[in-house]
Length: 288
Ligand SMILES: [Zn+2]
Image (tube, rainbow, N blue to C red; front, side, top):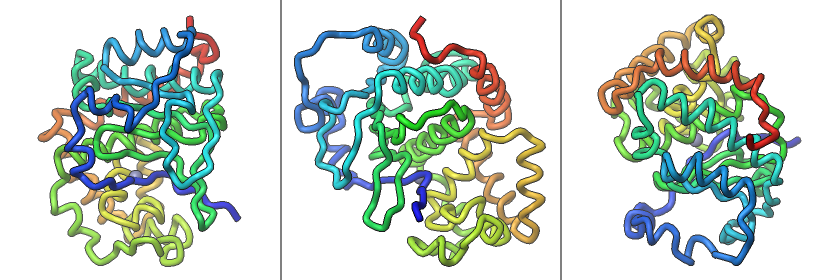
């Protein structure tokens, strides 16, 4: 049976990225291979909508990606790349612009490289990685070819990975980790908490959240943006004995986002949910 790992924080040695984190180094041959090609309509759209306002380079061509990963990866399809790029731009990046009043937050904090991969990354145990954040400077988005406009799922994944980036830049309060303390179980999260209901009762939104404080932190933050107030309340109500634990952790996240990043989580969620809904009526298949 195939199991999906929704999110993974890939921990490269910090020095590896910090030591080469100037703009030039990030675009060096060690990371990306430049090949001669004709610029197409998507390239121009990405330049105008990601690079110019945010200084974010979206890479969807497989030949651009140094494939030293231990996975068999399939390239992102052109049409699917358009859909994902437009949805993330509209419901994700522009939501931050709307609440902060400028492009600056995303320009200054979103990873400079955003990779699209067509397939998931299948691990030896059969689990599949859907997203990854590396060292604060690169976000990888897998399974682009399976995109079917589940807007809140796609946006939730971006928020989750972005949460890892923010956490890497300004570490979450240690008090967060202490709330569930010895409840974190690493790789055996799905044997310890086989179902979501088991995780909820123990104060985790999902079994994977019990793998580590870092995942718990970003899963809790990311999940918030996929749910209305009613849906969030229903989730907490179903947690029973775990509710107080989840609420205590979310309170820390709220304060951290306000104090460290000047973000109002509720205001941002309202904008994101509205945009996720509006995106249903966007034509994501063309670049007009
Ligand atoms: Zn993660």
